[in-house]
Image (cartoon, rainbow, N blue to C red):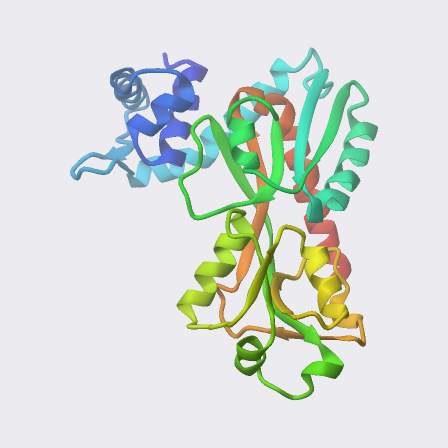
Length: 296
């Protein structure tokens, strides 16, 4: 009979797309992963993977099993937390980019009410790759921006919400000039390209052939918008959940007619600590749903 470990390995393969990548997540060799998956298929009597090509992909049976396996693991992890299955005991450190800290703080307060024995410590960060800190075990989870790179091994990712990229200029100085004209003749304030957001905006501008003249790289979105207030330059930034820039009479905020003009914010979790961080994930998702209902 297959053990819970086999289902955890199956989910890791499904999420990562290969036995080799999954092996890093579950601390097994690729050969051991393959043997476990053969045993799981034999036990269930279902072919879970299409092995005809170089890339392992889920079969129809694998796609049907995946949500049920994830549900099984969630129930098991909840049971492992305590006799009642709902009393979480422990401590987790959760990082967040600065613009999402208020959202995280709301979730933490809710979590403390529902799980008083779970100590959640928010950690703010304005730079660095939080997903790598989660992988290294420095953080148990992190609310951060997902880049285009492969998910670090040993971590899982849940998208929460998107934030559109917008062009912002000083309303009085900009007048009716178009975006291209303003970017060509005004100082362009851009997020640092060594950040996920900066890299995403840089790629978006290249795809849309948006050119600029003189520029200044800055690490803080709030600082860039404040400089636009002072008519130092213009900028392209994500319209964060907490921002009210559209309501500011001193600013002209312009959206782009491009579905790729956005960044995705979500939760990175260290899989070894997911039996605790999964509670935070559920609260964050519930908070998103509550906010959506209020906007309707």
